[in-house]
Length: 104
Length: 104
DNA sequence: ACATTATATCTAATATTCGCGATATGTCAA
DNA sequence: TTGACATATCGCGAATATTAGATATAATGT
Image (cartoon, each protein chain N blue to C red):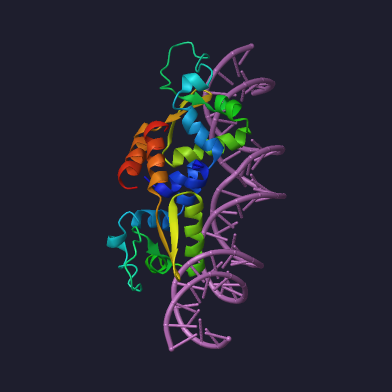
């Protein structure tokens, strides 16, 4: 867990919002995965387009942001057909919360 | 509590270390306030010079860093004669810990 | 095979941060 | 009141971040 990389990733209004929005995906985004015939478990993941719509920034920027958050260990992604679904990496977030509770 | 400003302030190895060092000032820094005749309560504060020595960076940079950390609400400062003593602002740090425990 | 759609990557202009030396300010001691 | 010391501020070039348009890749449907 690279704390510096994590704090840099969180040092931006939009990126911090993405993390917060993804805490309650069904509340903050439209239903996901309606395109699929068979039922797939998206684990609360949200596709890039939905995040882009919510954030109101360009596609390339949101893609870059999601990559930064993933590289920092804050998000996980899974590709399903044409779509990539991003969800929170609760493991890292719990470790971070732990860090603040004890080290800081 | 401006979270973005806080995360920016913590997005630097030296600045994050300063916050950690100041959790246990007597362990990480030489005894403070030896210059004073009468006993003054420094509340665990450490002077800029000691922080500069520990961090191994220039005086102007450490002064700037301490200012950033203070503006973000993470540090408090108190001037005593020629020296300025910096200590943690536990109120903000507790609020931040709370944020991670609940919002994130 | 080809057009369409979703996402990722490349490129580049602009903005911000980093970290230092130089200089200013404030404080004390002689 | 002058000199010495601690800290703060200024100014700057270098490095890095921001953000978007253009383009590439990957998957799907016809």
